[in-house]
Image (cartoon, rainbow, N blue to C red):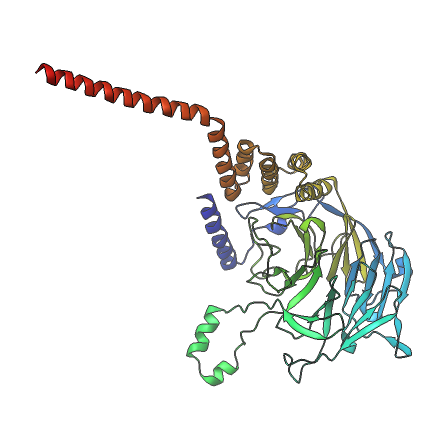
Length: 486
């Protein structure tokens, strides 16, 4: 019943907000010292939350000794915390160490015996072995360099029956898995990501977005003339806006779909396997001003334990979710203060901290965890690793700092469920309004009670059956005696 009410309430609220032209105040919710720190309750209300991350440092090109950045588009942090910044306007890669100290800059490489350079590159990816892949957009190619920045191969002008003769290859983002397969997000491609084998040959498209059909637009197309239909918008899938790859080889992607699933987790077949069992589907803000519209997600970063974060270009906010799709925390925003951005372009983690790249200002903002953020991160990771007692204690500490974080009660319930304390788990699932897990705990608790009291129950049943049988025998004998006397 509660779940039905919640599902009913949210669309009604959003319809009212759209009609009145006002939002539900998500942007106005603030915790002390954190102007953009909030979460969403089970009922879809924006509630205050402690800051999980705070901006502590700001770096520009001159601060790093590289000269000014010019419209940097992407950054990547490796497992050993090296930071690769793609300075697109200057056609170079800037490599920093874990303290953001300059290591080197790469603005050229050797190709066919001579120097070669980048032209307006848009995306960069670095493998565990230090190999570098660059989406060299202006030159319409992908550049694959080894850890010493020597050319491995160039991918350009792919040929296939799947591609039209007029196809122009314009790579924007790129990743590579452990099998050396390369996945490219290319401009103007609506069929998904382009997959290339280890030799650099195009093989297929994967993960195409579904087509969203506006019912009103579709109705008008049915009744309009051919000339009118030619002027209408075509029903085509939305393009992806970015992608990242987790250690297991799954692709996490964002797209520009404002009405469908704008975050996806793709397996090798291109099927979306992202879990969406939170109170709301992962999508950024769920309440907003009607004049602004929903979040426009432009980057995604995947950490360990299935934790992932997305960057909203429309409001400059970073949203972080656990593997089940529960919103953990929000930080960032647009503005001129520390921790706010003008044109956010990319995010990545360096250890437990975040780096956010501002394209227009050419700045890197460092966000460091607070005690609340560290505790919540470790609680989610402990549960993922199967450390029930640690997760139980950490979620309790999280709730002590933020009683509004409803899914933390579910985290405690799941930890208790794994430990076999079904009765206590039920109580926490009830507090988090997690009906599915409550039902699971109830069934297990009922089995436990039945198993515990089974001998007594069976004894009582046997005694009852014997009693009924004996009473029937006595009654029959009494009737026979009365009949004989008569």
